[in-house]
Length: 125
Image (cartoon, rainbow, N blue to C red):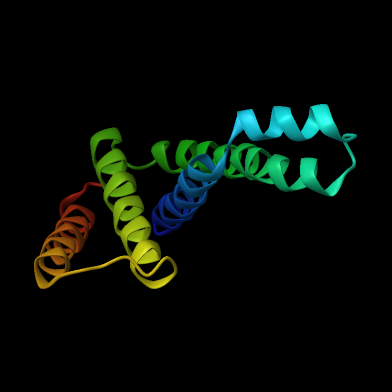
């Protein structure tokens, strides 16, 4: 009963990693680094890392999301997955990237969390 919800949370964590790998991916810089150096050089590796993480996090996201969707109603699962991913991305932005925040941001994040908890308790799964 709780395993699909754990899979959904893990999928959201992978979604957060996927989002940040997408943010740092730069195919132009990768192409330039590859044109200047070999595939095994440090400059190519630095530019290739976000793409590798993109594939890993994307695959993990799809795997755990599909496992959760087998037992949780689709609308509930997608709503919780999206909301939890959004909260995690905002928290990473605030604590890791030191972006600004306000009371209203915390208020609306709290509303999202309350919505996630409500969906979990009213969902038939």
